[in-house]
Structure formats: C-alpha cells, structure tokens
Image (cartoon, rainbow, N blue to C red):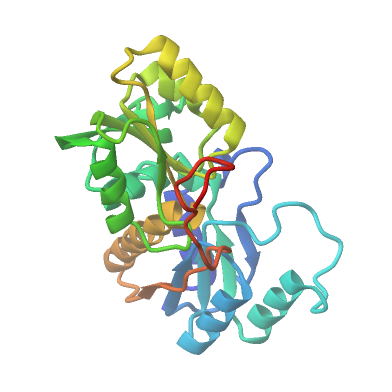
Length: 291
C-alpha cells in the first residue's frame, strides 16, 4: 500500500496547488505522511456527515473539493463544528486533502465533469489559462449540443442528469428559444458574465446566480442579441454542479493507482451535502392578483 505522502504527490500532480487562486486554501489539512492508504473517499464538502461516512467506510483519506478552513483560524477546538471534523479525522487516522480552484481550472477539471454529466461536447475553456500552451486549461467550458434543444428542454436535461437537490433547476429566458451552444461553470459563476457574453453562446449553466447580475445580464443580452435569441440562464444548486467532479476525480486517482500497482479502493460519497433541504413552488400569479 502507498504512504499518504505518495498519494498526496499524485493528487498534487493532477491538481497542482500552485494553480489555486491566491485566496484559496488547498492541500492537506490533516494526516500523517507516513501512514499507509488503502481506501479513499471523494466528496464535495468536508462536513461532519462526510467525516462520519469515512470512518464507517474505513477510509484512510478524504479528498474534498471545498476547503474546511477557507479563512485562517486560531482554534480546532471540538467545541466548534469545524473543529469536531478535525478531531473525528485525527482520532480515526483519516487524512483530509482539498483540491478547490486548482481543480476548477484543471484539464480535465470541474467544468469538464459538469459538461460530461450533461452529455455536452466541450469545445474550449470559457476563460483560458494564459499559462497553458495547449489552451485546454481554464475556468468554465464552452460546449456544444449534439442536437438543438429549446431552453425548456435543456433545463429539463439538467434536472434529469444532475444530482437531485431541493432547489432543482431554474432558468431565465424564452422557454422556446433554441440552444445550440452552452457555457458551463461548476460552482458560483455569475462573475463570468462578461466572458459568457463574449463567447456568444445561447445559454449559460452555473450555480448561485444572484438577482442583480442576472438582471443586468438579461438586459445586456437583450441589447446585444436579436430579440428572438437573448442569452438564457440556467441555475442549478452549487453542490449539484460540482458533485460530478468527484466521480471524475475518483477515476483519475484509480488510473494512477492501477499504473503504480497500489490497488487503492476509491469511493465517491453519495451523501447530499447541499445545505438546502426543501422547496415549495410559488403559484404563478402577479403580486396582488387573486390566487
């Protein structure tokens, strides 16, 4: 069996920590480099449910997309929910490693996994990494559909193919407009509207779309596009857009394990750690109108 340090070296080769954003907190949170690793669990969030799942599974290492401590801390006291995660992991000899924005821009990265889950054909990065001579790394992806769909059909595709969440899928735009090209970005993507508009795609699928950026994007799209084909926006739950990366990443580590003869047992958590737990649709009536 490989030591933790060997597995971490393989993970860092897949998602180099130096490619993470300066504000990010990636890498190994806890774990003894000399401990042997036989079982690995991939998940989106390093929350208590995932720590408990790893202990029950007998995992030696958890790899998550989101950091446990994104900002600095002065304590890992078990009196705090994040500290309890650390205590659970250390008591049970479970290491924790994070690949966040360094996996967002990787080749393949988080948005490649999202495109794959939606059965889209990736054409190029939405925001290319200027340090990549091959032009394959970067944030988000520009994709094509094999066959045109309406906005309504594309939103239904997302609802069917992404993991189920309380939010489901919401969209802005003409439901009957035709979609041939799509920009996708796993996680929060409303800071990418300028690149999306420049790409000239028919739709943009991401997560955490806020009122003002969406309103402004819709108004600009109406000005810049023909009245029959403004940009459609498709909003999914943050967790749902990033969970497909766990399956992709697990497959990447399994390939390394096979090549190195490690015989790692690699698992993907199916625990839904999206924080929203329920959803009730509003009646479609104008304010003040009778129900």
